[in-house]
Image (cartoon, rainbow over all chains, first blue to last red; front, side):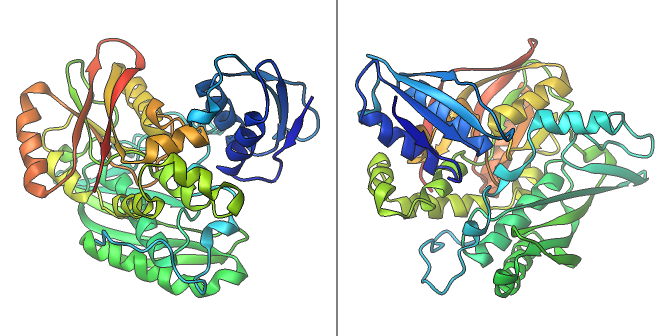
Length: 82
Length: 346
């Protein structure tokens, strides 16, 4: 499963990095994203939902600000139209 | 007020935004965290010594039957790289909390400034920007306090006066009132785009916007450096409630007014800086849901139906931007159901 680490990245870069990684995937594939910037998690969720990407929260450990999301590309995904 | 602010400075200008992870009103502590903090500290009740205080944009103390002193403090991290513009924005943003209460006279600012050692040269232009902004608001810089800080920040403690009966809070909105906003939204997206400078993504951001990014950013700076004083003066006699739009965003501030006025708020029309909706979609900022953080945003004003004509005339006469953005209902909470998005060019 492909992974992207956006820890240390500041908005809006996490959304841009994740969007680029998602654009390489086919419907049904999942990208795992790890981050540590609190505003980025909400922005990533919003960006994905807007573009037809399913978001689920993966189990996280370590520092409380860290998060891990599983982003699944659906048939409805429309990243190229952003 | 400059409308032709240069965003792309030469390389000898310190890049203030590179010294902080959160920018402008985005650095504000979240609404629920703030509520918890106040509750933990037992700071939830009204004080008998004040006309109003905690929970409002500013505090007000009645000095005489004809005079109230309004005080507030607001400071934040840089949202622009240019120190002079940062000073102007910080001053407008700090004073806005007083203007939101209708207090526009005798404006004074005590500067709150923190800079890392590498940016001490920026102190002078930041202060010059604040002084010029205060001057444009018929205010003065009365003093201040400066510290060394790993993250840069600037702002001020503002005092201003008004007649006690002229003061506005977030608590007076009534069902049937019309809602006005006096600046377009979108500063977070406009300025976020300027921070994407690496070759990997700059093309993506440029393609997403249908306008030059520098133009979008300069218009955002123009709005952020527009004081809310004229807007407050134009509407305070007729408004039932007011606040200003900051890091909580339009939806967040609407939730505050809805809760404190015990009403519902229906948002139907969002004016935004042209080009920012596409950037917001790219960045996941939630602009068209009213959820994006705003820096030095406009006033959000509730006006009874019988007074909308006179308020709109007053805004027009004062040259104040405004849009009717929704209404107050007898319900609860905030609804924003497929609002019209109006892209505003300055």
